[in-house]
Length: 257
Ligand code: AHZ
Image (cartoon, rainbow, N blue to C red):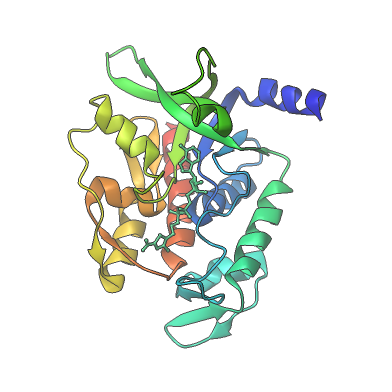
């Protein structure tokens, strides 16, 4: 265990892409990116022990998952069965969706998951023109991160990357991490915060808004609501999968420049 873990840490401390947060958006992005570019080294950093984010229930403690079309194409790609309800589809268990996605992503040879590991900060660098660029993340084991107030000198680690994708969900007890940190250190002028629930507006806004918000930092999923002020959407997950696909496409654009 230890030799493999530290060999992975050594290999992935210089990654092509770091994905922060292994919820439905981050994992959808990982799947799209890692399968379309097997040559890229992709590290996923997840603060929780278990991965999947808020996706083990469809919502309100109910087990089925609703996805608006055209997200059913993503389900077809993964081989997950669904019931067709016209404008939307229903997966029997949200857990079936997320566990299938987790299993397929983790089996890919160019992906390494560092779970129980929290991103604590961003690495920034100035390029030749003086422009600040996000160039990786500062990490620590989550239990360490939770104890900075009562333990001293537990230094963090770093993962350097060409592109960071942040998908840490909306603001809450934790979440929206990279957007909040970018605002704190003055890289973003302001952080708007998520607007009230409007299912009709929210899904389009998240998918269309998925982009590189700062040089080197792409944001997807509900974290984007903290930049654009778009609405929360409630328990419909199609936009998370499609935002992941769009994030992967945005990363390829950044990466190929
Ligand atoms: O543990 C978090 C979760 O698994 C992880 N995370 C948060 N902060 C982190 C940090 N370092 C590492 N500092 C961190 N990991 O990020 C993951 C976010 O997953 P999520 O499921 O919360 O976000 P998502 O954007 O993929 O999906 C959002 C699902 C929602 S919320 C919502 C609403 O409120 O209306 N509707 C939907 C569909």
